Figure 1 (cartoon, one colour):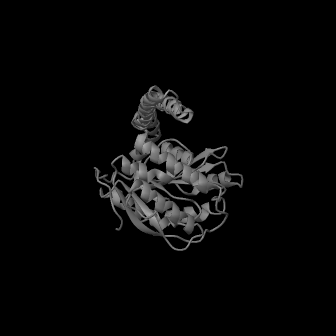
Figure 2: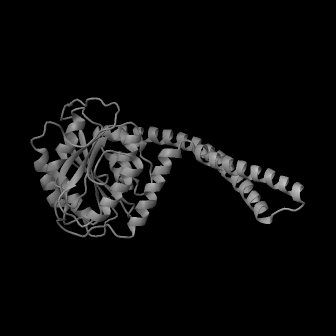
Figure 3: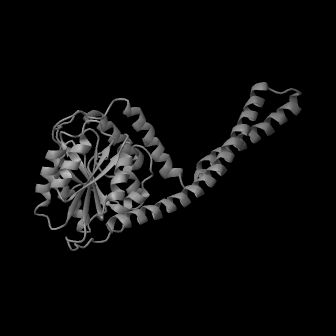
Length: 332
C-alpha cells in the first residue's frame, strides 16, 4: 500500500451474516452506458464470487437517453446484488452518488464508473483496507495512459498545493466509509474534492495503484469547458475549508484593516489641511473608498456568520434525514 494518510480514528467493520447484511455498496453513476453495463455486471459478479464480504452494486441512471434503463431492468433479473435508481433528467455525478448513497445498504461505499476504464476486479482491493480497519478512505491513483493526463496532472498539483493532501490522484475511483457522505456538501462536481473534505474532517486517507484501461464503449463526458469550472470549484472548496465556518475571520479582518487605513489616512489628511490650508483630492477619495469598503467587508462578515450558523443547522437536519432514509432502505 502506498501514499500517505491523515491522522484520525477508524474502527474495524466486522463481517456480518451475508444473508442479512451488505458490507460494501458499489455506487455506479451511469449516463448513456447501455453498451458497457452488461460486461461491467459480468465482471463484477466474477470479482465478488470468492469474497468473504457481501457486495451490492447500486447503479444510478442519470438521465440516460440510449436505453440504459431498459438494460438495467433486464440485468436486475439476472444479478441479485444489483439495485437500481433513476434520475429522469441528468443531474450530474455528485447527485448520482448521493442518490446511490441513499439507496445503498453497505457500511463501505465505492465510487466506480461504468465505462470499464477501471475493472470491477479491483473493487475488493479498494474496500479491503477499510473493511480491515486500516483506513477510512482509499483512493486509487491511475496506472496507464489516458487522454486527460495533462489536465489531470495540473489539477492534482494545484490541489496538493492548496490543500496539502498526501495523495497523487484526487479524481479517481475511491472507497470510503458512508459517514464521509455526511461531510460532503450537496453541490455540483464537489465529489471531486471528497478526499480533501474527508481529510479536513479528520478521516484517514490511503492511496493504492489501480490500472486504467481504454474505454470499452461510448464517449467520455469530459470536455474542455469543465476546466475553468474545476478551477473555480477548487477555489470555492479552499474558501469553504478555510473560512466557511468563520467568514468573519476573513471579511472582518479585511474590513477592519481597510477601515483603519482610511481612518489613519483621514487623520493625516486633516493634519495636512490644517497645516497648509488645503486638501489633496486623491487622498480624500482614498479615505472615502477605504472607509466604505471596510464597512461593507465587515458587514459582509457579520452576515456570513449568520449564514454559517444556519448552514450548520441545515447540515444537522440533512444528516438526520439521510440517516432516517438510509435506515428505511436497510430494512427493505
